Figure 1: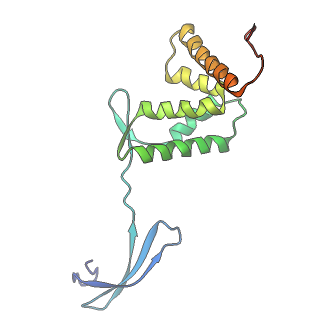
Figure 2: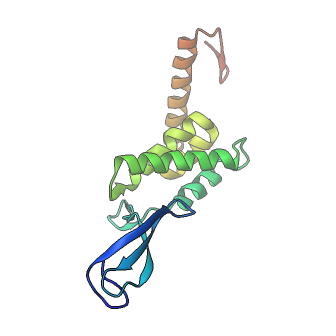
Figure 3: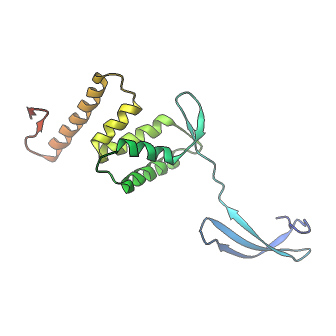
Length: 170
C-alpha cells in the first residue's frame, strides 16, 4: 500500500482489528520510509444484484419492492410485518445463493408466490392475480382450483376425514 504522506510504496501493518460493526477490518500501518502511521479499512466489495425485467430493462435489486408487494397482498390478513420481513429475507438469501450478478424478475415473483402459498392462501391469490395478470374469471378460477386440488392431496396424505369444499362433500 502506498503511503498517503510521502507516497512510498512499502508499508507495514502494525495492528489489525475487526471494526465495531463487523463489516470491515481496521488496519494501523506505518510507512517504511517516513515512519508516519495511518489507518486503513478493508471492506468486502459488493457487486449489486441486477434484476432483469420482462422488457429487458435492468435495475438494481430492491428488497423494499418485495416488502411493498407482500404488504399489499397481505392487507387485512393475519400476516404480521415480522412474517413479511422474514419472507423477504428468505427470498433475498435464496436469490443471493443462486445468482451472482443478475436474476430474472419472474424468478423473484415465483419465489414470492411459493412463500405466500404456504403462509396465506388469500394473500397468495391476491399476489398471483396481479403478478400473473389474470385477464378473466376463468384464469382466476383455474388458480383457485389448483389451490383446492393441492389442499385435497394434502388432506388425503394426512389421513383426514370428510371435508366440505364449496358445497360439495368429499
